[in-house]
Length: 214
Image 1: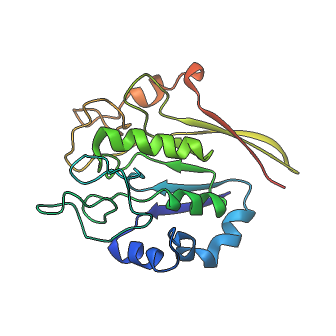
Image 2: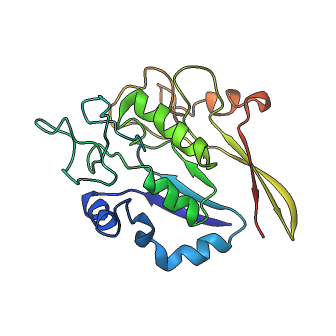
């Protein structure tokens, strides 16, 4: 198993990716460790921030989103039309997920302090983008219905078959209110561990993704 820390792209990294291809050269950011990631039977990373194609800082969708980041900086006054941004409110193009999948990343945590950087719609779009690429995720869910906050993956390899359950939670969302209960919190309002982290992850709600490695 291989584990990766925060996949967190500040402006400088988004610029670097944009300079290495019209569709985003995100693979160049970790090409030196790509073989190691792909060699593991399962690889996990923390996806720090939304992947919401065409979703601007002001919450509007643009009909023609840029293929790569324009690196206009963070969301702020006069910058509402920016789509892919760095600190303090992140958003990444789908090419990032394509590069993660190509590097062998199988499952990601989506519960972290930047999960709501494009609010509820951003969470929905990130969930959909991950599901479309077969990348399992834990810690967030769509706004339009009940769903598990965990993921279950299966690995079949020469060592045999293994099923793994993944849980993820966050201490907070940088002051952004999670009004639709899309992000798993680590703590309750009184600072005690949130009991729902286990209670809301019944087997019947499992998201299951199988991975077959040579």
